Image 1 (cartoon, helix red, strand yellow):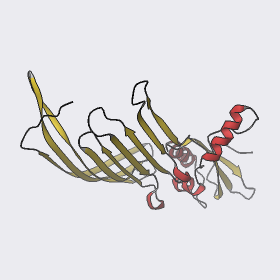
Image 2 (cartoon, helix red, strand yellow):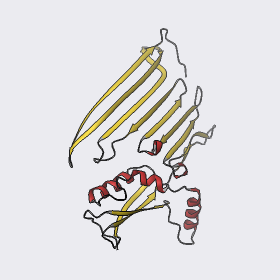
Image 3 (cartoon, rainbow, N blue to C red):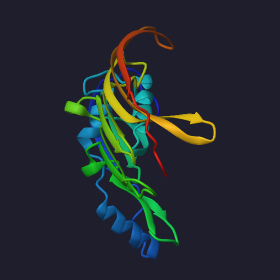
Image 4 (cartoon, rainbow, N blue to C red):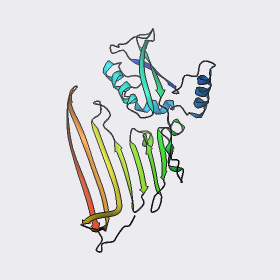
Length: 263
């Protein structure tokens, strides 16, 4: 039987058991739909789950690290629940069974109206592509006056096989657009001692100025930025202190001549 607590025994084995988000038992219509959805779903890979764990074979079994492992896994947007079970191995050590259940990872929504055009917007993507902790989504929105709006976002939650995150996203608006990129080692747990981030991005658009009864004037506006920073943690358990610094640069430019943006 699995026990809830451990007392410093050596960890002799760690087994990963990853499950899809649907219960596929039974023969009714709901179960059939669940089985079909499971076939289309890519369950999170065992190596992905293992990289998030703050425990390794050979470590001493500590309750605090087990609880932190569960919390880190549950914090991932593609994992709905996680539990760690401790079982004696019969030789003075313990085996750890890591049981996870995925979130529904398919992203599909939009806007439909009774007037033409019937489809006004669509968003499609996967929050856990191929079970590899990779999110990729795209969106389209019909414009009323100018060009259609397109959006794309990609997030890698384990860059280079490490708990580093890479996020890249961009938007083409009706007028102008934005893009930004971020690489970070997020502060996931008090067991960490360092955290850092590097980001950059830019945006283009217009800034409007009220002119009483006259049409509002607009100036072209461009903004670009970049920053780099980090945090160092020190102290005892439950009394952690953080010290950090960041360096940033920002540049903003406006056009010289106002224009009228008419709807």
